[in-house]
Image (cartoon, rainbow, N blue to C red; front, side, top):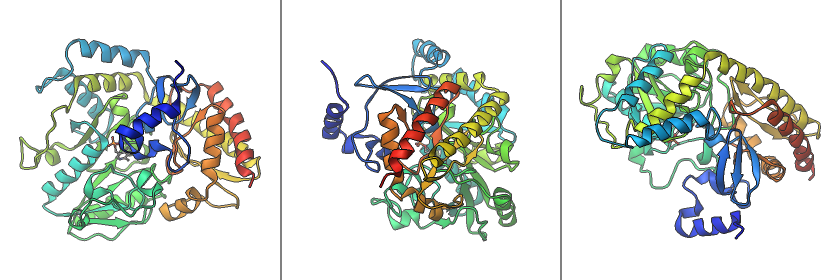
Length: 425
Ligand SMILES: *Cc1c(COP(=O)(O)O)cnc(C)c1O
């Protein structure tokens, strides 16, 4: 009765396109058969064959406390006993909205949705409704979910597949989306409703914002009356308690959240000042809705996560990640490969090459490194030795609060061995 990853993936491919519900999970870009997860606990996941991995995927950042945290599970259980969805206001959504607005300066109101994609899509709609303008500007290599108008020049799986956008998206849908290179402040005019940015670009591997980039965006938006939207689906409640604004000292007009705020359940949120959000129905003419929005299980899980982390915890995790980043870099460099492990707060990137290189500042530079073929070798060597990295070179590493010093030390040792294997021609 032993189960195998191969068998489950076979079955999956028959009934789910590519065997997955999100493309990167398919291992297409690294080759091989994905492991099918049976369970997770803290820093670890276990597959259906019983193999345990130190997990740096962590649901691409959705789990901050690690998998199956007892307090989170208990809050979900307690919420479920009272019913899972009603289509009426619940206390949980009020409590989570209060928690978010208490932590992020300038964030006065939020509305919950069920994914990061929806959060960004809705924030853009509000921005257009509030300004009466149509164009939005995004940066090449930033990922903002899979809505039509935002897939153009996307990061993550879109970058991995080398796609300019996606089939099935009409020219009309992207006609109002302007694309600019990351880390260069664009010149705007008064046709632009909003500038949408990942304050730290974490879907083209890790690309950090240059000094004054975010400040420059703020000033340029103010100059032409455009709204600045921070897509904080990754950075929110991970970079710092107050998010990217607290970390970089630049305040956007609209925020998008997801991942961490759902505690591992499907949630997104978008928010801003009361005056901007007054354009939303039922107060204003911008329509937005959702059957499962503000779901009691998800808001309970998210609230539990947020209530268990303080600013000190973020600082402590950032310090640990900085140490880990340097050890990881050194371990890879010992193989003769060149490596950089840029980090911002607890967000950690990984670039490897055979020649020396400088830290990428945009997708063009990141692409050269992400596409050089080394990552797939390194990835498989790590996986065989019990460390699960994301199966794509455009993703980053997520160190959760559950990763122990010993987990990180073992990962560094395994990285040294794995780099030596990847370095062989
Ligand atoms: C993951 C992600 C999204 C999309 O969130 P989903 O929950 O996958 O729809 C949007 N923006 C950023 C920056 C993300 O990392």
